[in-house]
Length: 471
Image 1 (cartoon, helix red, strand yellow):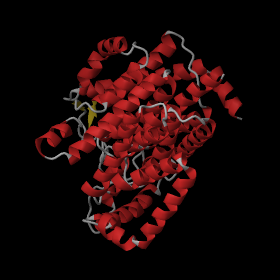
Image 2 (image 1 turned 180 degrees about the vertical axis):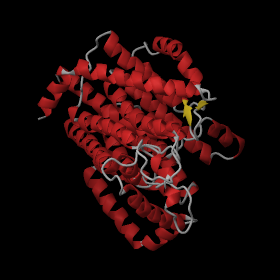
Image 3 (image 1 turned 180 degrees about the horizontal axis):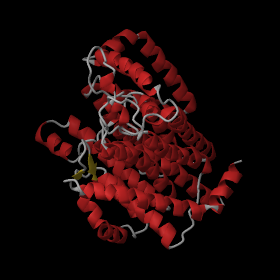
């Protein structure tokens, strides 16, 4: 079956590419006039797009530099462009769009073969992207007559976050063709994490200045999670790294844990996914010792459960937040029951919520859960495809972990991704950290969320490196 789909996609590659560009041109014919008719900065970007692409192409010709280092570095640039909505497009999103456009243009103009490097992750993710467009079309139906209409800009923005997240995975999987650049991109990520954690620990003006280096939205749950677990993987398993740098790698998750668990105490999205990912990495690195430590940690946690709940879980307004979230999930289930398969379309449910009062208040609210968000926006089908994709990522990572026996960069990377993916699935239950919702975390949160997609895509690149080395 796998070979059938692979052959089918290769056979009709030209058809798929031409269809994509026809749809893209039709979409641009709608989006560009709308943007030019509004007073926002994004219109000027579209006018300058050809010039920007030419310049960007010359920069990214240097091997894989533009495919990893430039993109991850751009996530931590504070530049933003207004869109006429509540969210602004940031430098990371613009650089990602530029890389994707150049990649697709090279496929068409240079007739570069579009290889599918891992069919098992490609199928669920491509189906997920296709279905988000189906949900977008479903969102053009007026499901609730008296609800305020969601702007087309917000709907396109919501759809764009879905699509860009997938392309971040594919870009990392297909375009990072040299382990050096994968290492370089990971180094930039770990440095960014280290800078942010130090900014929360170092007192006074030095700490404030360090904090200015990390823009709004970049310090979300994914930065804590992925910089911590990826650094830990290298620190524990990369025997080819100098001991000093391995020590630095071990310092990063330590600082991440300290900041999340003590300085930001009560922020469950910070410490819970991080703890889970660290536990997975330690267990995979040292199966026997990690298992014993895990059992001991669970036992100690159970013994001190009430104290932990009081000091770290139900602290501040967390109890109220949990109660309102449960109420919101029930209401969103009721709202989406009108279209359970396709959902209500990207960003659409937000303006419907005032018709369904929560605790007596007719206000707009969001779910604060990635899974409920996906169900409300893309229905049961979209949610199932999302979970299927993550299952395939875990399966790929597990297979690579068993195949790579040498303790090196690749081993540390694979183990780090396995821990990060598990943590990401936990984080998704606590907020829209993986695919930011337009009216909650917003585009600024894409600076953090895209880290997960890039790191997971690196698994496919690792698969290719390892295959080349063993041939």
